[in-house]
Image (cartoon, rainbow, N blue to C red; front, top):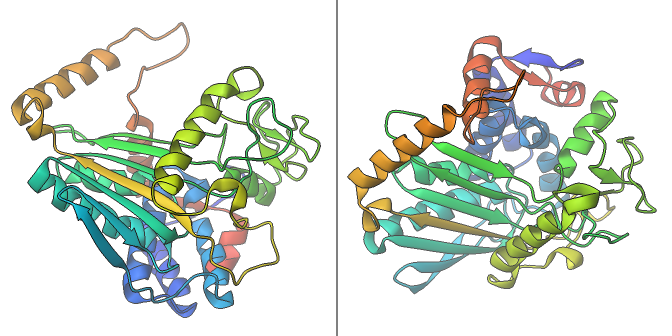
Length: 343
């Protein structure tokens, strides 16, 4: 992308770690956050990658984020638990919650952990991927502050509210889906502002609710599906709010303090997340799962592409190819992030 600067992964991770530690984050919080940010930057989810380190450092210094949270877990049944994130970095909470979900699933077949008093957790796929790497299917959701208009609505109501799922595939990288229920994440608007680039059509609206391609004029996003089919994205956003906030006791989207568009940098936001791990061996059985998954993906990738298009890809294929390319070429960062990290 024009205006981006390439950095090797080791150097970038070291600079992010140093920046978070300098802002006061504990070693455990820093490690989990750096890992999640680097996952996003490696796989091309730049809006949720290392560029967010500057924001987190600011919030750590101003008191919104607890630099050294004491995570507490309340087990509620054999396969369920609630994790109190103590207003720390959401990456640390989600990382530990998915570890717990995997442990419970190894015993009960399923493990579900609701998280409250959390914060922005970056790319939700980073935590779903932990389950896939442990041989399980992982599903992660997170609610967020209202910056997406409901379908046919003129003011924001839902957050971008991501849904992520990862599934193991024998001999291959995991199947990996990670999407916002808005047309784009708001961090992409911020990234395009930094690069002074226009937005795609039909993804954002100005303060009056009118569609705009001007990243600087964008005040809210449109739900997935845009002006014509946004009821689909709006419905999915509600699903995420129910799992992540209603079910856990976290703050619902319209009542949450904004992530950035506010002068209040000292009040915690009580974001909610939900992590689910599923052991395929407890359903169809591991051999049958592995065979079915390989067969399904093989057939999918063999579907003839449209003229001039293709190839047909499974979720995650593009991301893993991006990770392979960036391992050799370096990871692109925007000018603001380059200045913050001193590169």
